[in-house]
Length: 390
Image 1 (tube, rainbow, N blue to C red):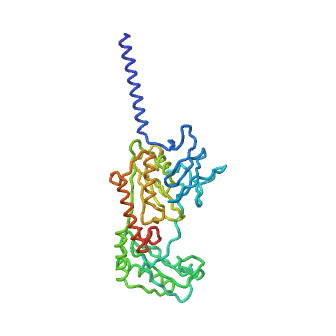
Image 2: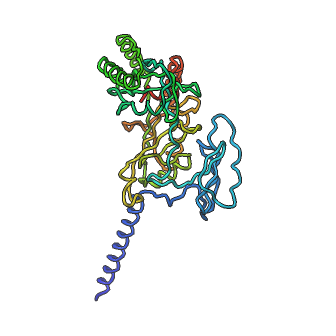
Image 3: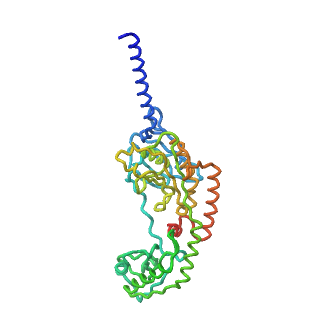
């Protein structure tokens, strides 16, 4: 073999090696970031503390994966996180202190706090019909007489009794006795206002229940109640608000685990559906403050870490969260923190970048919305508002 052939062979080998190396580099750059890429750790992998915009000072996890954080308290300085226990404990929540795993499973294992006790009938948003009884009725008898479905058209239907012991209105319970009854149907919800047909169905259902328990109903005027329903629906339609930001990847895609890891650092926990996380309210049983959602198919994939996400959605159900939680402030903080940590940008649903001025305008509009809801006794986050805007 001549010197020229040997030289060409060497050059060809070097070119081939370069192409292989370049392809490997491109592949590694385009692969989704995974939860093993642990932001906040130094080069040696030792824990570091960092400042979370939503939860205050947080200590990165030790090798057991347990971290300490302070629950969010808006407008107050954060205190140092408490010293970790000698032995790791299961995640628990208490006032001012919580332990959460930094890496949150993408599929559901963490269950959000159970909902609070169902709010009772309210004359502000319900048609209420008294059911007169001659004497106390047992809760067991009332439960046996309840209709199979608790809806009238698209509206919730309910029966309540005045508990002989507590003196409070409540849904019938076994072993209790009630000396007064009432039936109700909601005037409006996101499906619209109560109409003539639904009111008539309510009358039929309430009358059947009353007959079964020996009660005498006193129905209000249909025209007046339907008119009230339309008025309430008109107000609700003009004051319903659901906000959404979209976080889009600028460079590398994200794996579901990588998104969950970064969201968990801000206090998010796994929701009840795959691909959904929530920022819990400060009070147990309240609606979550924020929701973060991504492709559920990616979350349920056989190997989620190989799934590539280019965007995630951050949303706020304005009427379901009390103003005192400062939900929009925390939404902006969460979006900014996630965008910075994951090299993303914040856009609207149409892909337009959201500027600071745009967000300031949204915040001002929300304050006016809160004032209007307060003036109608439908404050954001109240049981009445959560029922009306559902």
